[in-house]
Image 1 (cartoon, rainbow, N blue to C red):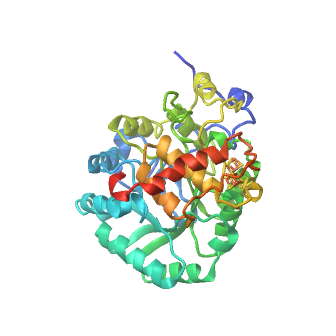
Image 2: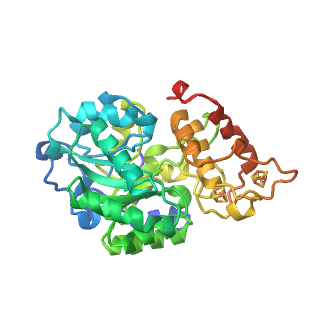
Image 3: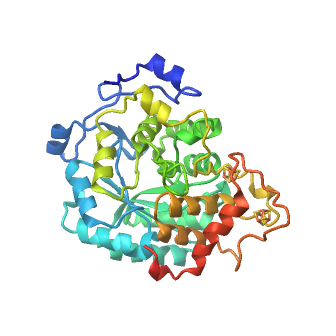
Length: 390
Ligand code: SF4
Ligand code: SF4
């Protein structure tokens, strides 16, 4: 039987030492919660508080990007997950509609619903938000978010801040958030400085372990009272495009949660087994040596996860939004979610052909990705009707 690591051994084995040390169910985390007490008592779930929102949520909740199965939502809630995360654009709105069907049969105080949307003007934001409320069959959401910000400027845009604040004042969103998949440190700090947003949903996983700027930004924001939710903890689910080499996603999830400034996580699932495996992490995040080894912290395998460092953008003659396209690539091949890949590509307002196929591509990815090849591969998805994609 494998032994769990103590703190000293964990730090020794981790490539750079995990941010924040090792926490276990019996450690410094509080396992109490006001929500669904009977399930909590039965399952001994570990909770953390989502910054100044005061909301206490399990370490692992449900991200709904990879499935549209209502039975998975019901089971997740029955097990004790309380934060359900979706987005206006997932599955062209069908994801929110499905959640609306499930949640109308649930006690409104037994879960927290988070959704997010894009929009440049007040009219666009309000229209998208009202559509989301209608699909979800709710009067209010618990956390309303700005979807996919990649800069301080975008995050602190006055129109967006004003419109989101207005929605909160009207009582239609209890808390406000921003999600980010690229240039995360800048966005996370902007969220903390905004005075409007309460929570940030950020990419955070073992592949980003050397990304000190990200860890510093998370520390900065958490110290300012911002709730931090980790996304992309599974770093693409597979190491390879052909899905022959799966990532140990449970180890990946535990690794992300070693950072005490990560308050919760929302890994997506597409099967009951995955849900059960993820849920088990709510009882303990202690890691074995084999689990650490599985994560290949020596960076010997490039995998499919783009760090979002944006170093390649200025190298591209067309200044393409490479990190977003690499994320779409990961959605299609790693997450098996072509619809999400298509939605991501559509959101980028690319021309007819994304890549110019320059005689010699000037992009040098820090991870060694052949960026032009991946762009051309994923760009094909824009020629498929969204009706054929799920
Ligand atoms: S080949 Fe494509 S990715 Fe490379 S520099 Fe040209 S436009 Fe950019
Ligand atoms: S350099 Fe590589 S890892 Fe960094 S954003 Fe570009 S594609 Fe992603």
